[in-house]
Structures are given as C-alpha cells and as structure tokens.
Length: 183
Length: 194
Length: 205
Image 1 (cartoon, rainbow over the protein chains, first blue to last red):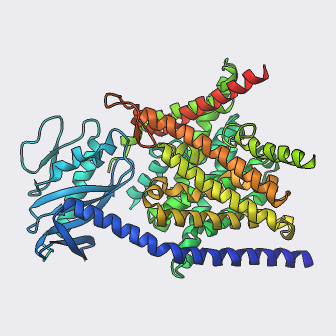
Image 2 (image 1 turned 135 degrees about the vertical axis):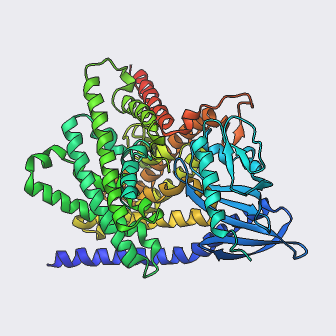
Image 3 (image 1 turned 30 degrees about the horizontal axis):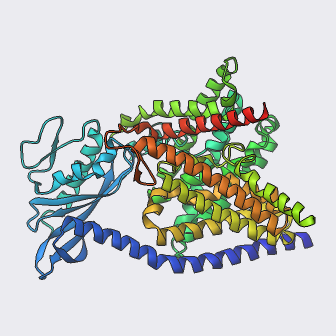
C-alpha cells in the first residue's frame, strides 16, 4: 500500500512540476511566437507592395484580407492569404491584388513542401514574378512549354505541372471567394 | 465524404507512406524487418495501436486540451496516452496469443517510442482532421507502415543468400534498400491529384 | 593519482558517445530526425542542439532525483520529464528562431520519442551520479549532432551546392535533386554507416 502511495505521489509531483514549468514556458514564448507570425505576414505584404507603409486586416468570406495603404494614407491594394493542397502537402501563399480586383500585383509563397528542385521552384522569384500585373479575368490560367500569350496566363514550371497548377487553382478559388465582396 | 476518407487512407498508406516519405517508424523498420512473420506481427500490432491512439488523442485534444486552453500540453498528454495504450495492448496480446507475444519480444513495448504513432497524432492535429478522418488516417498510416515493413523483410530474406560487402551488412544495406524503395514509392506521388 | 584515473574515466564516458557507441552509427537509434531534417547542414545542427539540450537536461534532472523515483513508474516519470523539456525547446525555437523552427517542423516534438533520450535515461541516468550522467549525455548528444551535421553537409553540398548556406560549387553545378529527397537521405546514411564500419574494421585488423 505504501508503495502504491509513493508511486502515485511521485508521479503527481512530477506531473505538477512539469505542468507548472510548461505554463511558465508558454507564457514566455507565446507573445514572441505571435510577434514572429505577424512579422512574417508583414514582410510578405510589403514585399508584394514595396510602397506600402501600413495595412488593416479583415476577414472576407473566410479569407484573410489585408488592405494596404502607402505613406500618404492612400489605398493601394489588397493582399490576401490563400492555401490549398499541392503535390506534396499544403501550399500557403499571400497574393496582392489591385483595388479593383482585376490584376494581381504579386505573389509570395509562404509555406510549401513540394519536391525540391522541381515543384519547390514555385517559391522562386522566377516563378512568382510572373504573377506581377497578371490579369485575373476570366481566371488565371497556365500554359506548358510555351511562352504565355494572354495577359491572364503564366508558364508552368517544366516537370512541375502539378505544383504550378495547384498554385493557379488555389489563387482562382480564393479570388472567387472574395471577388465582389470587397468594399 | 467517402472519397475524402478513401483519399486520406491511400495517401497515408501509399503516396505519402509514413516510413518512406516522412521518415517515421524507422527504428522498428530497420530493426524488425528481418523475417516476414515478425514484420507482419509488428505491423499489425502497430496498426492497432495507431488507430486506437488516433481516436483517443483526438478526443483528448478536442474535448480537454482545447476547451481548457492547454494546447502546449499536447506532446506530454499524447505520449502518455500512447504509452498507456501500448501497455494495454501488451497485456492483451500476452493473454490471447502467447506465441505472438514471444515472437514480438522486446519490440512490443518499443512501439511506444515509434515516432510514427506520435507523428500521426501531431499531423492529425496540424491538419485539423475530423474524428472519422483521424481514424482512417491512423488505419492508413498503420497499413502503410506494415506494407513497408513486409516489403523490406521480403527483400532482406532474399538477401540472406547474397554477398554483401562487410561494412554494409545490417543497417547499411537496409538503409540503401530503403532509399530505393522510397524512390519507387515516389512514383505513386501523382496518383492522388486534387 | 585518483584524479588522473577519474579524468581518464570521464574522458572515456564522454568519448564513447562520439565514436564507439555513437547513437546513430552504432546503436542505430534516433533515425527519424536524422533522415528528416538533414537536408541542410544548419537544420541538422539545430536539431542536434535541441536534442543535446533535452538529453542533458533530462539526464541532469533524472540522475538528481533517481533515488526518489520508484522503479515501477520510472518510464512514465522519464517520459513526462522528457516531454516537458521537449515542449520547452520547441517553444523556445518558435519564439527565437522562427524560420529554423518552421524548417524543422514536427520533428522537434518528435524528440520526445527519440529512442536515444529514453535509452540513456534507462541505461545510465537512472543508475549513475549527476556528473557521470551529464558527461554521458553530453557525449551522446554531441555524437548525435556531429553525425547530423556531417549528413546534412553532404546532402546540402550535393543537393544544393552549399554548406551552411555558403556557396561551394559554382553556378554550373547540377544539383543532385535526389539528395534533397527521402531516398537520398536513406542512401547517404546507409553509405555513412558502411564507411564508419569499414574504418572500424580497418582499425581492428
């Protein structure tokens, strides 16, 4: 009986001390983590809109949208978060769109685990720069092995059609959700 | 709904096989893959634990940790659940099938440290699966693990009669084979396109 | 006289983790993080440091209170203590090294089931004094980290042409994509283990 009591009390003490240590750790780390996440978001927004100086965030039809203003307080465009399934996992991205939601102003891939050297090239400037000044009407499309002809087309990465297509599909789906709902 | 479940199962078992794509469960993979019967027994025990673990940890996370604002107790809570489950499974196998118990030997308690089980529960939380999705995910992951284990043991049984260079015997050649298997499984990648 | 012997003994305890009983190359433990995070040398280094931290802290705590823990509940106690340190390490990384934490992903919490840590507690820290356990843990952790860095460097060099993000091969180098894939990890580690065994065989000959 004494043995059982000892076992239970030791485990309880260990559990309590660990729990307390974790609460302490959590309280220390959580504000820093939230700050890191916000910084990451901020960096992406200002990489898409280099003239942007401030932004406000809102949720439109389930999508996180950021209204970006420049140094003079003028409204220069929106950025929105989009995510979806790629070839190997979830792709998270932030895209910039003009005030009248007709043209994309840029694309930043935030998280992706595609095949390195192939699908993962979607995170490179070479691919994402195609999304600057890209028309979104009727919707974004991709072409393979040729240079894009129309203003709403981008060229898919050779050998990484699925990843490229995923990016395009995710963008189209998200734009559909927010189009017409932005003030 | 059914298609999502089937996709999750196939994805966990084949296209994103836990062992060959996510590097989970390598220790038993390298350690218990010498004989097919051993591999099969280990695989089934692990699948059983995985499915149960997925169910129990899902309930604990969604009904206890989240409502009480304790997400940071996740790792500690999950591993305790897994350890207890393995203990229970061990007692169950001991009672019902003593020969399986003897065959698995020390590897049964080692299922606790099988990163695949904890990894499975962590992914389940990260991907925000529903209850049924989590169960199917656990089942699929277990089947994938068993599949990889059986293939590897089949190959290693064949290798018994081959001349392997001294330094590569054991862990070395097993890892290289695993690499080739992983390459082969990559071919399944485009199978499930969404 | 006794001091010299003690120093030699301590040295032995430390060095065994580096070579003779290297956790990855000899004991074949802790494979999961070894293969998963060694796409770049920096990630391997970070994972090694995180594991070293958990290993040393857990050994410190467990060897200090080992007389108070009844044998029947020792595994449960070890697990809770290890999980606490792992959670702390994970949150610390997320707070201060956000990009590295994202790259290491779910593999930091998986340190909890890294057989090396539980193995060392069971085999050593529970039965030995604080100083000895510390040295043992440090040696094992360091041995683990070194293999991670070596593996990470090889994979980064051949897969991306860099080591710790420094360009080694010029722009003309055709990347070995396979090195960045799981297959490359398995194969490289397999050859590394083979190379290690070969060196040992030569030494004994």
